[in-house]
Structures are given as structure tokens and as C-alpha cells.
Amino acid sequence: MDVMVDGIERMRQVVAVAPLLGLTGAENHPGASARTRAELEQKVRREVQHTYHPSCPARIGSETDGVVDAELRVYGVDGLRVAMPPSSRLCPTAIRMPATVMVGEKAADLIRESR
Image (cartoon, rainbow, N blue to C red; front, side, top):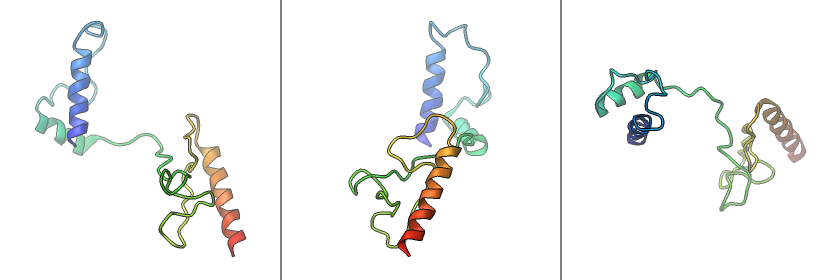
């Protein structure tokens, strides 16, 4: 929470000085009514939501730099595979649906092959 409130306060500082001063409009969110840290925290807790699709939380790699191996098996947990959108080492910056379907299809193949 401290990091989120710090971020709001820092952004307010950035837009309050040249060259952005005078180029920005009214603050949309959290808005001018939230001034203190307590008010900002209250706004964040009540109103902030994530509008993007989270992805790449379980990337493929070795035990030291990844969460799953090349067959999507979670290190240290027997019998668990993760097929996230996507589990690759690099996250796509475009539409994630095709990559998500691809990982899901690959996971289904790997599970069928392991039986």
C-alpha cells in the first residue's frame, strides 16, 4: 500500500512541474479530494482495480530463474502443472489470447503424454 500511495504522490509531483505543468488537465483518479496519505490509501482500497490481464507469473526456466520446467511442472510440487497466459520467458506485448490457447493446448498434450 505504501508503494501505491508513494506512486500517486510522486506522479502528482511530476505533473506539477515544467514541462508538464499546464499541459495536464484535472486529475481523474484518485482526484483532488484525496490529499492526505490516509485519504489516498482509502481511495486505493475502495476503488483501484486491475484492468489488464495478468500474465507470466509462472515463467519457464531452471529452478533458479523459473517457476515451471519445460513441461509446465511446478518446481517442488509433485503433480502440479501451471499453464498460464503465457508461461514463456518473455511476455507478449500484444493480444495474449493466442498465446494462452497455445500454452493450454501444449499443457493438454503434456498431460496426455504423461499418462
